[in-house]
Structures are given as C-alpha cells and as structure tokens.
Image (cartoon, rainbow over all chains, first blue to last red; front, side):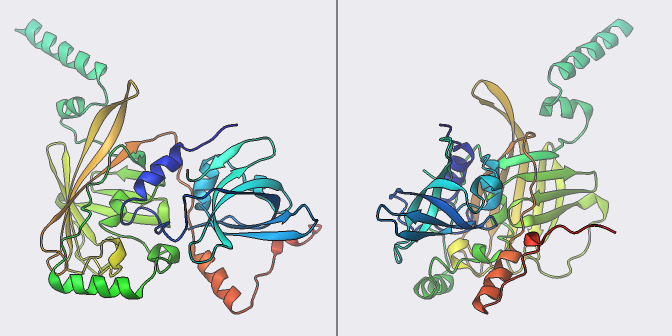
Length: 124
Length: 251
C-alpha cells in the first residue's frame, strides 16, 4: 500500500498560517478517522475543494449515502496520483472521513483507498 | 604578465564551471540572479506572529468580525484572491516565475493568481486601480531583488491578516542553496515587511520560502464555476450534461 503524503504534509504545515489553506479545518473533528466502503455516487472533482457522495450498503441490505461535503482541491488530488477515473461514479472504494463538529452527517474526505490497496491521504 | 592574466581567466572559468548556478558565478558574470523556474512553497516556516499587533480600532473590528463571521465565511471558499502580501506564503500549489530584464512575472496555481513586478529602471507604469496584488516596483541590491508594493485594495477578512488600502509591502528576495538529504537544492527566500498603520501598530515581518521544483507542472485552477454551480443548485437549476450525449456522426 503506498501512501502519498509528502505534498500534503507540506500543505498541513502551511495550513497553520493565516492564509495558507482555503480555510481552517477547525469546523471538522480531524482527530476522527471514520472508515466507509461503498460505491461512488456523485463526485465533483473541482477547486477550491472536491466533494463526493458514497453509497454504502449495510449488512441488512439497506443503503446509506455518505456525504463528503469537502475534500482536498482537485489539483492536489491529481498531484497525489489519484486519477479521476479511480473515483468515477460507480467505482467501489473505501474512504476515510472526519465529521463536521456541528453536523456529524457531513464529512471531510481525508483519504481514498482503492480496491488494489493504494491509499491516497490528503491529511493525516 | 600575459600568462598571469591568462591564468586568472582560466581560474575564473574553472570556478564558474564548477559552480554554474551559484550566486558567486552570477556575480562574477556581472549578471543578476535569475529567479525563473517552477517552485513549491516549503523549506521554511513563516514567521507570522501569533498575535497580530492591531491598533485599538482594528482590534475592535477584529472582535466584531469574530462574533459575526463563522469559519465557513471564508473568502477562500469563494475564490477570492488572497493578494499581497498573503499570496507570498501562499497555498500549497506550484508557483512559476518568469524573469526578464524589465519585469518579473509570478503565476500562482492556487486561485490562478498572477502578479507582475516592474523594474524601476525600465519605466514602470503609474498606479491605476487599487488591486489585490497592487503595483510592485523593484530594484537590485547586489543579488537581492528589493520589491516595493503599494496601491493595494483593502482586504477586510480579519481572520486572514487583513490589510487596508494604506498597506505597503517591502520584499527582499534572494536565492539560496541548501542541503536537502545530502543534495544541494535551490530556494527562493522572501523576507517581507508589511506596514499598515491603519491596522497594525508596528511592521509585521514574515519570511517565506519557495523550493525550486522543476519536476512540477502548473495546472489550471479555476473555481468560479464551482460557485456558479452552487448558485444554480440553490435555484433548483442543473446544467445540461453534454458528456452524457451519444456521439454523433460527422457529416
């Protein structure tokens, strides 16, 4: 499993500066790493932040939509080596999220794990 | 005597050949350093003060701002350029610099920002409209490029080092070679001083560093389409999906 974090580590350092990132991540509880597995439904690979929904099938067969309202900028995602086709609608992936503090049904997309085990972390 | 001169010339040539990219070599040629190239922020932490030295009036505005604005109310979400001086320590994206005798152009991938620094000895333009990057005029002091920037428009986002239109930025840029894991790497160091007597009681000093990264590329960064799509969503409108159309037959 390859974890491509070098660029993002640099980004994390910079996010401590007043204008380094697009905004503070304090609205999310970044200490949490909640794992999901499902099929990509809608993906918006865009700037200043990507967004994605993932449909998860629960053991009882019911489905739940996980709303990653925010992730890294599209440019940062592709620099990590993640290809748009890897997270195209219909693709099965694992994803790690951190919930919003004021709305735990919405998540920041911290990492994507492809079926072959490749992990793309946008923040540790 | 002729042999001595020839020997000195040969010695100088040896020095230049041994260190073709060093400041020493550039000085020996009588040329200014060339900042041109691709860079990425890093290689050094900013020295942004944790507590900004607000004037009492600005402090009051900052407290009011904090009580009304949330973390979601961030100009970055709305694709607003950080502008000067905030762009200098910038977002984690590629930066490209192109240097000519008459000017230095800087392209930031993040926010698609663009800035031109005019050389004072090449008839720089007069100020026109206040802008996010302002008007920058520079001169060389040895191997250091000294840039003076004014004519900035106000940046009233108190959570991001706000500045008034009276702000003035002085930058001193120079190249350095540093050891990175046993290899010599080129860095562009920017020692910046912000003065803004309407907002801050004293100059704010920041050091920002760009690392030379010729292996990177400059991607397009647009985000206003995101804003428009969000706006349309609020109106219940959806843009047509042209990619879902079947391929036609060209006639």
